[in-house]
Image 1 (cartoon, rainbow, N blue to C red):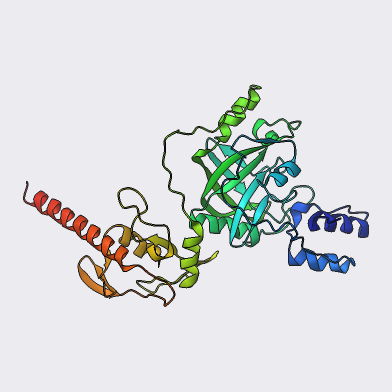
Image 2: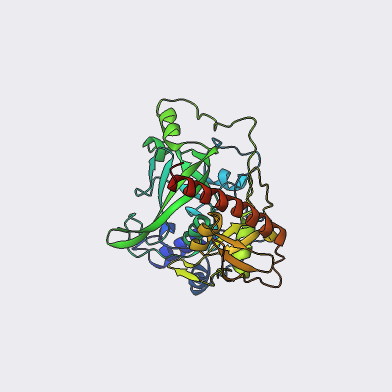
Length: 356
């Protein structure tokens, strides 16, 4: 029989220190540190890859927002939140889901917004006793923010109702990470994230709380019947960033934030109507935030020979890796569209200046 590593270490610690009792699983993360600690207790940690289940981002088939689970195990088996202990199911390169439980008083729900505190640094009492670290699932939420990749949110009913006897777990659907930063709790640094419900793919937590408090059933997510949605492949943006080591293809800037290197994947030919550009590597550039804004704002264009133009004046050359497979037809389309926009803007400015 295989046992999850974190509860196993918690019990082993309690056996060695009966006066202190078992550790809280909220106080530490899994991984190499847990492996080394268990080895000191004479326990060898092995990985269970028998199921071979891939990491699942986004929606889970046959599990719509509003699905209710009697416990964390049911949510785990459904694939909504693939851990029965931790609040974050994710890795340093991306987080798939989070779970809000009533042990975390820092978490808040306001309308369609959720304020969520990262993992680590807590004692059995629930107080913080150490700084949280920007690693593993904590860092994964930052990566989701950078990529615009949604995260699934599972919440214990008692978090919404305030009634401790409410032990069911409700799947709220998909949320995007709209911001993150550092805060202080009990004198220690903690990571604080803000998430917003994705329209049509989630329930609004405050409305769910109101329904549950009234004893009503959880209303299904509101969806429009005849709506075409663009489903983005977030792996494409991640790929172009890796290809250029987060270095801007136009200005060669490489930004490094507290969460590591930062760059943005920019579509050359826009995805939406009427452009209908493909969500593929051949239609993607790795840009810094400044160049991304200028590119989308039709100031920066790229000529067929790779010359970068800034408002019609040469401004350098586009850096293209040998294995990028960039489609210059998309760049030609963007240049033509941007030039038309620039000409139109110039005419408007001229007419205003002439009092037309």
